[in-house]
Image (spheres, chains in turn yellow, orange):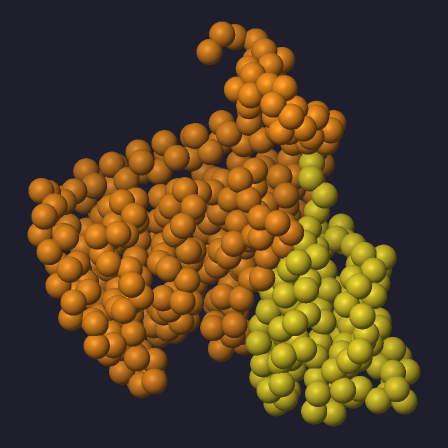
Length: 137
Length: 327
């Protein structure tokens, strides 16, 4: 049986419409060999979680440049927990001040990658930390 | 195989557990034996859903039309499942599955289930995976299942054989003269949809299509594919009304299929494709996968490049090795 492909969701919660970074990451992930579900801008945390469950993703990458990350990112994690899907890894990116990182980690965001992070670093992190979990069934 | 686990999974599907359904589809895609067993068990209980196939060139507007069709069917109280197929990169093995972007307005509605699938290349067994995924969505209780795909590769045309009603979406001014559209797609269309129909070249496309249809000697069951025109999405209310009309045409085709003869002919066509897929999946793919894992495939590839032997020589060796009977 062939090695299982990772399914990754790239999502932009909230009203921030700047999606260039998200698109670059989505294309990069495709070039890494992952199956990427790109849900576009202006998603509510509820929509993101619903899509994540329907698509059976292993990782959700949240992007926010408007400063609403402390509100929206933890909301996504909370909803995943409520749905019993807390095995889905959540990471964040965008314009996020260093002093907010700990807050996000405490809320369940596994890692934060801000602008300037080499793409290869993100890939290495994913290969090391994200697996196809058997827990679902 | 763990029987009680399988029974539990089947119960979860009946209970419409979204993640379990999606994971099962994934296991089907990855050819996990347990998934096949589950599909075998639920198969006798399927057949309740009506399947719509929608295909056409990239950018033709399939996802947008699908989005509005979902709304249209939901208005009638029907539940909808969607399988949105996008190509896997032949170089990296990855895929950017973006059809969902156009359908996110339905994300709060638990009567709608949308799942994106990647084509996964020649050994991927796409056609078989989509077939099985349709059974799962059917068993889950969906009234309508929409399968959306770009109709380029043979396997994507094959997928359309799972559908009761096939929509081919065309757009004017894409340089795609009707005459150059591939035979497979033109022949399988039950309804033609001209999208972005406010474009100046629409009339030409419509006339070309009518002329092409006029030249057909006879249509199975005398169903001549109607041409439905949709105008710009810039006027969403009008677009929605026109999609309601499209939905009515689809339902008309469903009724037409109730006629025994036509239905049987289509079931035969579908069964043929399913059988060929099943044979490929049970015989061809496991052999190729084994050779890949053993490193044998790579050796053969090197041999071909060095002109040591032709692909046919290697294929004959493989046949000798794996088949007991003379074919």
